Length: 457
Image (cartoon, rainbow, N blue to C red; front, side, top):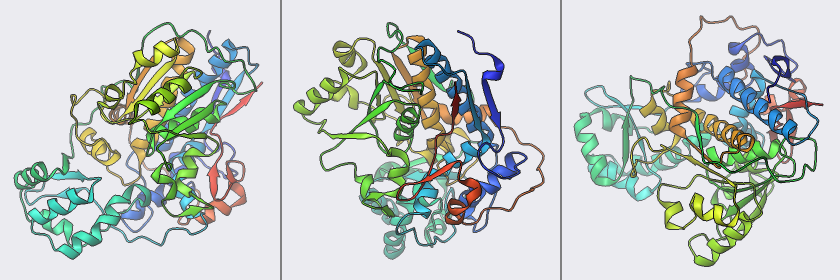
């Protein structure tokens, strides 16, 4: 089935009631400059046309969803999105946090990438405070600076800034060979900032056959109405993919560990749920399962037997360890789409370093930012791949933060600076209350971003 060119449209402002003329206006008005600029202490444009790239991917995903809808007999004939809606999706977590019941305290400027004594730029990553302590102790850092630095370092994904007084100076006193050796011995992930951008990877890879068109009976007027997605994901990339599938009409059932996903309780809060978590998981159903037990894995397979998609972003080896590989799910649900949204894919072998946004940025050569640009774009890419699989009959979708970063690089271009025609947002709470954004936002405990698509019948 081929869609006509006028079935898919991309505007600049979409439902935002501002006279936005292009990328620079959108970055300024919709909060991207504000969030990216937190580490510098002033609104600053990103080094590439991020809103345009997200909007193009959303348009491709919308077109794929429209084709699927028509194949399923859902009477939809056109879809639209915009640069402004792409930009708001990019800042959705920060916007939710800024409009929560107890918004974050102002953050000081600062943050990596770091530089060694021989001027090599690099990123580090640790998710374990013991690794953090060992690394800095081996380099002779002050204990108080190390302790004070852990929280801003861990929360830089949420705040887009990371002041580390005294610690950057420690690294600047050592050559990169010494720092790399200490990182290896203490378990710290270290990745040099590449000056050779990765741009050769496809955004996602489809494989397997036998899926056919989805079996769910359409129960509404959205492309994925009547379909069920079983999601086992944490952080941003995977949950955002599931969130977009829900906005396209799917019922999404999240598997969380006993007691719930720990991210649910990370301030600032919107009611009894983390505002950032709410921005990615609103409207999903939840079941608590311990996948580390045989009984929990049997329960997951029972749920998969009635699902159309299984989505996870587990670390390498977990699917094999838990016997929840594509073949395992296909035995209970032939034709199910098995989607893995990973950090590195297969590019760095079976034992890659930690695959988080900022180290992937460094390795891939994406212009550095403490916004989670790769995580967000990776979520859009993963959702696009899943809808493409549902349309084509493929049964496996593989995407990664690295493949998303490569796609960002491949589509990036640097235009001559456009003149700004609108004021620069410097307060996300004010943006959330601005009636000119009402068509793109909704309040539910905090300000959230509406669906980035409008489908018409």
